[in-house]
Image 1 (cartoon, rainbow, N blue to C red):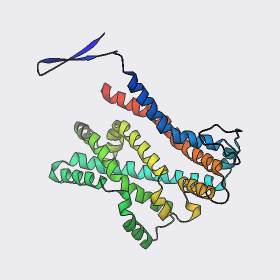
Image 2 (image 1 turned 60 degrees about the horizontal axis):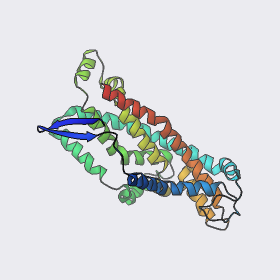
Image 3 (image 1 turned 30 degrees about the vertical axis):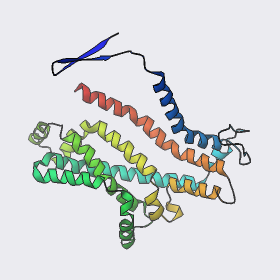
Image 4 (image 1 turned 45 degrees about the vertical axis):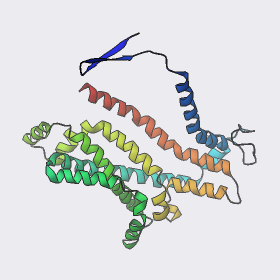
Length: 290
Protein backbone atom coordinates (compact mmCIF):
# COMPACT_ATOMS: atom_id res chain seq x y z
CA UNK A 1 0.00 0.00 0.00
CA UNK A 2 1.37 3.34 -1.08
CA UNK A 3 1.59 6.14 1.44
CA UNK A 4 1.72 9.90 0.98
CA UNK A 5 4.13 11.48 3.41
CA UNK A 6 3.81 15.11 4.32
CA UNK A 7 5.98 16.80 6.90
CA UNK A 8 4.29 19.43 9.06
CA UNK A 9 5.97 20.93 12.12
CA UNK A 10 8.61 18.24 12.04
CA UNK A 11 6.09 15.41 12.05
CA UNK A 12 5.21 12.97 9.33
CA UNK A 13 1.56 12.72 8.24
CA UNK A 14 0.72 9.45 6.51
CA UNK A 15 -2.36 9.28 4.29
CA UNK A 16 -3.16 5.80 3.00
CA UNK A 17 -4.08 5.43 -0.67
CA UNK A 18 -6.11 2.57 -2.02
CA UNK A 19 -7.58 1.61 1.35
CA UNK A 20 -10.97 -0.01 1.57
CA UNK A 21 -13.82 2.47 1.80
CA UNK A 22 -16.59 1.51 4.15
CA UNK A 23 -19.66 0.06 2.49
CA UNK A 24 -21.85 2.45 4.47
CA UNK A 25 -20.42 5.42 2.56
CA UNK A 26 -21.52 3.88 -0.73
CA UNK A 27 -24.95 3.10 0.67
CA UNK A 28 -25.48 6.64 1.95
CA UNK A 29 -24.26 8.11 -1.34
CA UNK A 30 -26.57 5.84 -3.30
CA UNK A 31 -29.56 6.84 -1.15
CA UNK A 32 -28.79 10.54 -1.57
CA UNK A 33 -28.55 10.15 -5.34
CA UNK A 34 -31.89 8.33 -5.41
CA UNK A 35 -33.55 11.09 -3.37
CA UNK A 36 -32.11 13.73 -5.69
CA UNK A 37 -33.23 11.94 -8.85
CA UNK A 38 -36.66 10.90 -7.56
CA UNK A 39 -38.48 14.11 -8.66
CA UNK A 40 -36.82 13.87 -12.08
CA UNK A 41 -37.92 10.24 -12.40
CA UNK A 42 -41.51 11.12 -11.48
CA UNK A 43 -41.56 13.96 -14.02
CA UNK A 44 -40.19 11.80 -16.85
CA UNK A 45 -42.37 8.86 -15.87
CA UNK A 46 -45.48 11.03 -16.00
CA UNK A 47 -44.50 12.60 -19.31
CA UNK A 48 -44.49 9.24 -21.14
CA UNK A 49 -47.94 8.09 -20.03
CA UNK A 50 -51.42 8.80 -21.34
CA UNK A 51 -53.73 11.23 -19.62
CA UNK A 52 -56.08 8.38 -18.70
CA UNK A 53 -53.31 6.40 -16.99
CA UNK A 54 -54.02 6.71 -13.25
CA UNK A 55 -51.49 4.19 -11.98
CA UNK A 56 -49.20 5.35 -9.11
CA UNK A 57 -46.53 7.83 -10.16
CA UNK A 58 -43.67 5.53 -9.20
CA UNK A 59 -44.98 2.76 -11.47
CA UNK A 60 -43.96 2.62 -15.11
CA UNK A 61 -46.61 3.74 -17.61
CA UNK A 62 -49.20 1.17 -18.61
CA UNK A 63 -48.70 2.30 -22.20
CA UNK A 64 -45.70 4.38 -23.33
CA UNK A 65 -46.42 7.31 -25.63
CA UNK A 66 -44.59 10.27 -27.17
CA UNK A 67 -47.74 12.24 -27.93
CA UNK A 68 -47.15 14.55 -24.99
CA UNK A 69 -43.73 15.57 -26.31
CA UNK A 70 -45.07 16.06 -29.83
CA UNK A 71 -47.82 18.29 -28.49
CA UNK A 72 -45.31 20.18 -26.32
CA UNK A 73 -42.97 20.89 -29.24
CA UNK A 74 -45.92 22.07 -31.34
CA UNK A 75 -47.29 24.31 -28.60
CA UNK A 76 -47.01 27.92 -29.79
CA UNK A 77 -46.90 29.30 -26.24
CA UNK A 78 -43.93 27.10 -25.33
CA UNK A 79 -42.05 28.08 -28.50
CA UNK A 80 -42.73 31.74 -27.76
CA UNK A 81 -41.50 31.19 -24.20
CA UNK A 82 -38.30 29.65 -25.56
CA UNK A 83 -37.71 32.69 -27.76
CA UNK A 84 -38.28 35.14 -24.91
CA UNK A 85 -36.09 33.14 -22.52
CA UNK A 86 -33.21 32.92 -25.01
CA UNK A 87 -33.28 36.68 -25.56
CA UNK A 88 -33.50 37.23 -21.82
CA UNK A 89 -30.60 34.89 -20.97
CA UNK A 90 -28.30 36.30 -23.69
CA UNK A 91 -28.91 39.88 -22.58
CA UNK A 92 -28.29 39.08 -18.91
CA UNK A 93 -25.07 37.16 -19.70
CA UNK A 94 -23.69 39.96 -21.86
CA UNK A 95 -24.51 42.66 -19.32
CA UNK A 96 -23.03 40.82 -16.36
CA UNK A 97 -19.90 39.50 -18.07
CA UNK A 98 -18.94 42.69 -19.92
CA UNK A 99 -19.92 45.33 -17.36
CA UNK A 100 -19.08 43.18 -14.34
CA UNK A 101 -15.71 42.26 -15.81
CA UNK A 102 -14.78 45.88 -16.55
CA UNK A 103 -15.86 47.04 -13.10
CA UNK A 104 -13.91 44.22 -11.46
CA UNK A 105 -10.83 45.10 -13.49
CA UNK A 106 -10.99 48.67 -12.22
CA UNK A 107 -11.47 47.59 -8.60
CA UNK A 108 -8.68 45.01 -8.74
CA UNK A 109 -6.17 47.40 -10.28
CA UNK A 110 -7.09 50.54 -8.34
CA UNK A 111 -5.89 49.38 -4.94
CA UNK A 112 -5.98 51.56 -1.87
CA UNK A 113 -8.53 52.02 0.89
CA UNK A 114 -11.36 53.14 -1.39
CA UNK A 115 -11.06 50.04 -3.56
CA UNK A 116 -10.96 47.79 -0.50
CA UNK A 117 -14.05 49.50 0.92
CA UNK A 118 -15.94 49.10 -2.34
CA UNK A 119 -15.10 45.41 -2.50
CA UNK A 120 -16.34 44.92 1.06
CA UNK A 121 -19.51 46.84 0.22
CA UNK A 122 -19.96 44.63 -2.84
CA UNK A 123 -19.79 41.50 -0.66
CA UNK A 124 -22.44 42.99 1.64
CA UNK A 125 -24.73 43.54 -1.36
CA UNK A 126 -24.43 39.84 -2.21
CA UNK A 127 -26.03 39.00 1.15
CA UNK A 128 -29.27 40.87 0.35
CA UNK A 129 -32.06 38.50 -0.83
CA UNK A 130 -33.37 39.56 -4.23
CA UNK A 131 -37.01 39.07 -3.21
CA UNK A 132 -36.61 41.66 -0.45
CA UNK A 133 -36.18 44.26 -3.22
CA UNK A 134 -39.32 43.17 -5.08
CA UNK A 135 -41.65 45.94 -3.89
CA UNK A 136 -39.19 48.75 -4.53
CA UNK A 137 -38.08 47.29 -7.85
CA UNK A 138 -41.64 46.81 -9.07
CA UNK A 139 -42.66 50.35 -8.07
CA UNK A 140 -39.63 51.83 -9.80
CA UNK A 141 -40.17 49.86 -13.01
CA UNK A 142 -43.85 50.80 -13.09
CA UNK A 143 -42.92 54.46 -12.71
CA UNK A 144 -40.54 54.29 -15.69
CA UNK A 145 -42.94 52.14 -17.76
CA UNK A 146 -40.59 49.16 -17.84
CA UNK A 147 -43.23 46.46 -17.26
CA UNK A 148 -43.68 43.75 -19.92
CA UNK A 149 -40.30 44.50 -21.53
CA UNK A 150 -37.69 41.76 -21.82
CA UNK A 151 -34.79 44.23 -21.87
CA UNK A 152 -36.03 45.82 -18.65
CA UNK A 153 -36.18 42.43 -16.92
CA UNK A 154 -32.65 41.75 -18.21
CA UNK A 155 -31.39 44.99 -16.66
CA UNK A 156 -33.03 44.14 -13.35
CA UNK A 157 -31.64 40.59 -13.28
CA UNK A 158 -28.15 41.73 -14.29
CA UNK A 159 -28.17 44.40 -11.60
CA UNK A 160 -29.07 41.81 -8.95
CA UNK A 161 -26.34 39.40 -10.06
CA UNK A 162 -23.65 42.00 -10.77
CA UNK A 163 -22.24 41.87 -7.24
CA UNK A 164 -21.60 38.11 -7.48
CA UNK A 165 -19.99 38.48 -10.89
CA UNK A 166 -17.71 41.24 -9.63
CA UNK A 167 -16.75 39.14 -6.61
CA UNK A 168 -15.68 36.22 -8.82
CA UNK A 169 -13.80 38.37 -11.33
CA UNK A 170 -12.05 40.55 -8.75
CA UNK A 171 -10.75 37.50 -6.89
CA UNK A 172 -9.16 36.21 -10.10
CA UNK A 173 -7.87 39.51 -11.51
CA UNK A 174 -5.89 40.40 -8.38
CA UNK A 175 -3.80 37.26 -8.97
CA UNK A 176 -2.79 38.41 -12.48
CA UNK A 177 0.47 40.33 -12.58
CA UNK A 178 0.25 44.07 -13.25
CA UNK A 179 3.32 43.75 -15.46
CA UNK A 180 1.00 42.61 -18.26
CA UNK A 181 -0.91 45.89 -18.01
CA UNK A 182 2.29 47.90 -18.09
CA UNK A 183 3.61 45.95 -21.09
CA UNK A 184 0.34 46.52 -22.94
CA UNK A 185 0.42 50.23 -22.11
CA UNK A 186 3.96 50.48 -23.49
CA UNK A 187 2.71 48.91 -26.73
CA UNK A 188 0.03 51.58 -26.94
CA UNK A 189 -2.98 49.53 -25.81
CA UNK A 190 -5.74 51.35 -23.98
CA UNK A 191 -7.75 50.15 -20.99
CA UNK A 192 -10.45 48.39 -23.01
CA UNK A 193 -8.00 46.72 -25.36
CA UNK A 194 -5.84 45.59 -22.43
CA UNK A 195 -8.81 44.09 -20.67
CA UNK A 196 -10.40 42.30 -23.62
CA UNK A 197 -7.15 41.19 -25.33
CA UNK A 198 -4.84 40.54 -22.36
CA UNK A 199 -6.83 40.04 -19.16
CA UNK A 200 -10.09 38.46 -20.37
CA UNK A 201 -8.45 35.41 -22.07
CA UNK A 202 -6.85 34.51 -18.73
CA UNK A 203 -10.24 34.57 -17.02
CA UNK A 204 -11.63 31.68 -19.04
CA UNK A 205 -12.35 29.36 -16.07
CA UNK A 206 -14.25 31.95 -14.04
CA UNK A 207 -15.99 33.31 -17.14
CA UNK A 208 -17.35 29.92 -18.17
CA UNK A 209 -18.31 29.09 -14.58
CA UNK A 210 -20.09 32.39 -14.18
CA UNK A 211 -21.81 32.03 -17.57
CA UNK A 212 -23.29 28.71 -16.47
CA UNK A 213 -24.50 30.21 -13.20
CA UNK A 214 -26.00 33.27 -14.88
CA UNK A 215 -27.65 31.33 -17.70
CA UNK A 216 -29.17 28.68 -15.44
CA UNK A 217 -30.33 31.29 -12.93
CA UNK A 218 -31.93 33.49 -15.60
CA UNK A 219 -33.53 30.54 -17.40
CA UNK A 220 -35.08 29.27 -14.15
CA UNK A 221 -35.96 32.73 -12.82
CA UNK A 222 -39.57 32.63 -11.67
CA UNK A 223 -40.32 35.36 -9.13
CA UNK A 224 -39.38 38.52 -11.03
CA UNK A 225 -40.84 37.48 -14.42
CA UNK A 226 -44.10 36.63 -12.65
CA UNK A 227 -44.54 40.25 -11.55
CA UNK A 228 -42.74 42.09 -14.35
CA UNK A 229 -44.05 40.13 -17.36
CA UNK A 230 -47.83 40.09 -17.07
CA UNK A 231 -48.35 39.96 -20.85
CA UNK A 232 -48.60 36.34 -22.02
CA UNK A 233 -46.75 37.24 -25.23
CA UNK A 234 -43.71 38.24 -23.14
CA UNK A 235 -43.81 35.17 -20.88
CA UNK A 236 -40.60 33.20 -20.43
CA UNK A 237 -40.47 29.43 -20.70
CA UNK A 238 -40.77 29.00 -16.92
CA UNK A 239 -44.00 31.02 -16.86
CA UNK A 240 -45.31 28.92 -19.74
CA UNK A 241 -44.55 25.71 -17.85
CA UNK A 242 -46.25 27.11 -14.75
CA UNK A 243 -49.32 27.88 -16.85
CA UNK A 244 -49.33 24.28 -18.11
CA UNK A 245 -49.29 22.89 -14.57
CA UNK A 246 -51.96 25.37 -13.53
CA UNK A 247 -54.16 24.18 -16.39
CA UNK A 248 -53.41 20.59 -15.44
CA UNK A 249 -54.73 21.27 -11.96
CA UNK A 250 -58.01 22.58 -13.38
CA UNK A 251 -60.63 20.94 -15.52
CA UNK A 252 -58.28 19.45 -18.13
CA UNK A 253 -56.17 17.38 -15.72
CA UNK A 254 -53.47 16.78 -18.34
CA UNK A 255 -50.55 16.27 -15.98
CA UNK A 256 -48.52 14.16 -18.47
CA UNK A 257 -48.52 17.05 -20.97
CA UNK A 258 -47.41 19.49 -18.29
CA UNK A 259 -44.56 17.15 -17.28
CA UNK A 260 -43.51 16.81 -20.91
CA UNK A 261 -43.38 20.60 -21.27
CA UNK A 262 -41.29 20.79 -18.11
CA UNK A 263 -38.86 18.19 -19.47
CA UNK A 264 -38.56 20.07 -22.77
CA UNK A 265 -37.90 23.32 -20.89
CA UNK A 266 -34.99 21.66 -19.05
CA UNK A 267 -33.21 20.49 -22.21
CA UNK A 268 -31.39 23.79 -23.05
CA UNK A 269 -30.01 24.07 -19.52
CA UNK A 270 -28.71 20.50 -19.63
CA UNK A 271 -27.11 20.99 -23.05
CA UNK A 272 -25.44 24.24 -22.02
CA UNK A 273 -23.97 22.69 -18.91
CA UNK A 274 -22.74 19.56 -20.69
CA UNK A 275 -21.21 21.64 -23.48
CA UNK A 276 -19.46 24.17 -21.23
CA UNK A 277 -18.25 21.99 -18.37
CA UNK A 278 -15.30 20.69 -20.39
CA UNK A 279 -14.12 24.28 -20.83
CA UNK A 280 -14.14 24.69 -17.05
CA UNK A 281 -11.94 21.61 -16.64
CA UNK A 282 -9.60 22.72 -19.45
CA UNK A 283 -9.32 26.19 -17.97
CA UNK A 284 -8.51 24.81 -14.54
CA UNK A 285 -5.84 22.50 -15.97
CA UNK A 286 -4.31 25.42 -17.86
CA UNK A 287 -4.21 27.53 -14.71
CA UNK A 288 -2.52 24.70 -12.79
CA UNK A 289 0.06 24.13 -15.52
CA UNK A 290 0.99 27.79 -15.44
